[in-house]
Image (cartoon, rainbow, N blue to C red; front, side, top):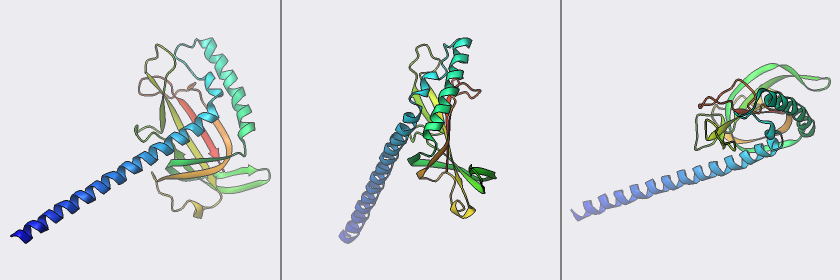
Length: 205
């Protein structure tokens, strides 16, 4: 009887140890993902720090909106000239899809059959949106938070380089910036509170 008691006690102890290790492992994984997300978010904000002052606000008049859109387009062109060809690195992107695209020209005189992998960066604590929320600095906004949608795509020269990629897999991504787009919320896209949200689009090669 005593032997059976020891066996049962040993099994219970082993189960608790395994369960504890699993919980610790899960906690470490979450912490790592949160840390990587914050680092990637910081990289994106470095790109839009100056241009974001022309973002849409609910209090903008029609004249203010038109003026902002004009300056936003001008600054976006300047940023593209500055960023084109710059190497950028993200630590924790999520793969959304891989698709073939029409032949495009990456460099003058060079046309390749390409494949496009599409990614996003999202808050691990706020799943369901391809991007992240930010605090609104403007008083009297309908929502206490705004949303920034993130779309990142990378062009690949051959099928073999992307054939084994899996949807929703997460990991690092590096590439040279080919194109940068920022909407500033001046669009027809709206968040859950009915307000327009900002969009960041990056094309890499």
